[in-house]
Image: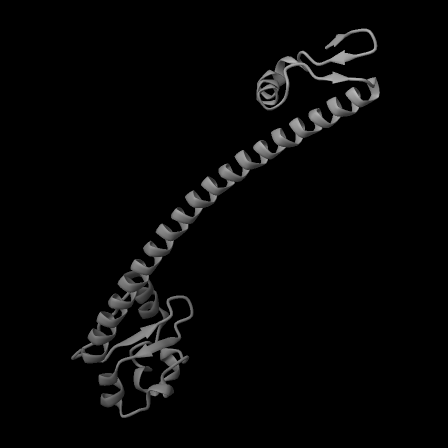
Length: 171
């Protein structure tokens, strides 16, 4: 800033603002006279505030771009995870259907027990037919509570064998 007699002329505001000064110079006369020092200060303050707000807007835009990139990355990861879960769910469903078909059509009577409690959780149709007893009569009961199997599971040794081997076959 050059201070002349009663007049003040702007030559350059600061190093950071040289680019803006070049833009302003193209639109206005090179040296503009200000008759009032207060007017000059007010204009410089306004100019600096505009520069700060422009810089803050650029920072916010950069932050918004980074946030958008992060969201796109997270979205892609979630879509991939969802696709993986859907595939796993479809595979599990197909496996359950195959298991159910085998279980329901087996030529052996099958009871499925809870390994911890010994309670019956499922029974196949052939065993229901062989024992002429409804399916519901088996569910949630322990094998020893059913009259048909009292002699088979009379001692705890058979149940321990079942827990260890995960199956016991009776002929």
